[in-house]
Image (cartoon, rainbow, N blue to C red; front, side):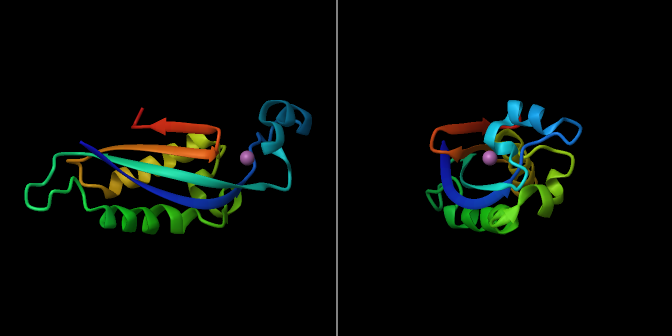
Length: 134
Ligand code: NI
């Protein structure tokens, strides 16, 4: 069985490769390459897979999952500039794909290994990525 906690955070980023010209960056990354950065309202879904605990009826206490996401993800990235403030993205372009991967790695370290873990991350209403370790 899988259960999910949804959380949101706001963060700024810029998608660019420093070795490319502004023109080439604009061509590849579009508006997201704007030199002065811009923000997105990210929606994160964290899915945890496991057995129902016969004592509680829960797969995982969603309050605990909420606190885990707040402490290790939202509090870390909310209202931050991912390129400039977050060492996790040093040398990594903060695309939705890479942000989802960073978040999965962080949560995987914190979550009991008996649970399966998947994250879904949307940068806009129309785009969403999914990561489960691959
Ligand atoms: Ni963007």
